[in-house]
Image (cartoon, rainbow, N blue to C red; front, top):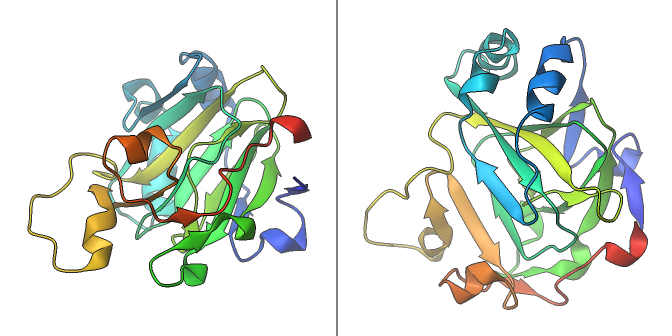
Length: 210
C-alpha cells in the first residue's frame, strides 16, 4: 500500500498540520505512557491534562470548548474499523505513525469500500488535525515492531459511554460510544462483539509496506 506524507497535497481533504504550539512537555509526558503489545486507548489522561498545552487545545484549537487529552498506544498494522466524530481529532506521536483514512462523503448506502482508504505518515513531534468529516481509527506503526504512542485530543466526553436511546435511523446503529460512529470490518473484533459491519472489501494490512 502506498504511504503518503501528511505534507502531500493529497492529505488536504483529510486534515491539516498545526504549528505554533510548544509540544516539548507533551512529547516528554506522552513518552512515559504505556506501550502495550496490542492497542489500548485512554480517553482522558491526567498527566497530559496537567500540561500548559491543555489550555491551548481548549482555548485555541477548539475555540473555548471543554476538551480531553488521552492516548492510543500499542502495535497495529490493520484497518479493522473506521470511525468519525462530529468534531476534529488532534493527534501527535512520540515517533512516526501512520493513519489510515477515508472520507465520510464516500460512504454509500451505509457502506464504505476499503479500496478508498489512503495511508498517511505523520512525523514524530507533529501536531495534526483530522477533520470531523474524515474516517479514521487506531494508528498504525510506521516501522514494523516499533509501535506507537499517539495523543488523542477530542471534545470532552467523546468515546465515553454511549447515550441510551432507541435507534431511529441507520446512523444511530453505528453509534457505539458518545460522539463515536463506527463502521466495522467483518474480520474485526469489534464486529464479533456486535458492531455494525459497514466496511466492504479487504481488511487492509500495511505490514508489507513498512
